[in-house]
Image (cartoon, rainbow, N blue to C red; front, side, top):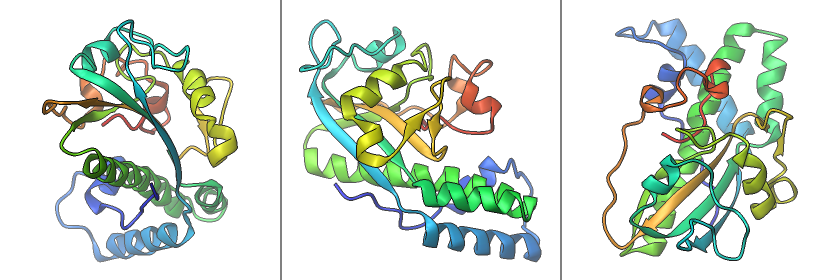
Length: 223
């Protein structure tokens, strides 16, 4: 499945910027237009995914990986299969944001927010394509390590199972955060019945107060 970044949702960029105003000033709108266009030109999205049968003990068939925590198993209770996903905007987008930080901090802040919105678009497009390919079956929302009571350390197992570092060039820091930062990992359940969608909100997560992503102004990609 080919990763698609066909635009950046302005509303999500503004959400990541914590902008709650009404009409945007012309200057801010022009800066957003310019930064989003530059990011779209620069980003080289990549992804890797694989579908696994979900065994009765919660382990993914053919692996020794059993997702940690109770929330994920409740989330997958109607599912018999699970898709593991890892996606990234690539090192090029990371370099763009880093260079901007040394030249113009306002641009860097906008590019960082647009990058968060952009990787969500890549993942949303993947889920749309996946849903079409698996129809008439149904998908859950995405659920990522660090969300709810799933430990962030699950990243290590997910990276190993998908061979993420070799296949799409994303690595993990000692604290299990991804490099490049505009990257997402997720589990997606597959079921024979429609799945209730969760609200797209950090506030609904049990890790809201301690989330390492939120503390750095990032998203785990679960919503």
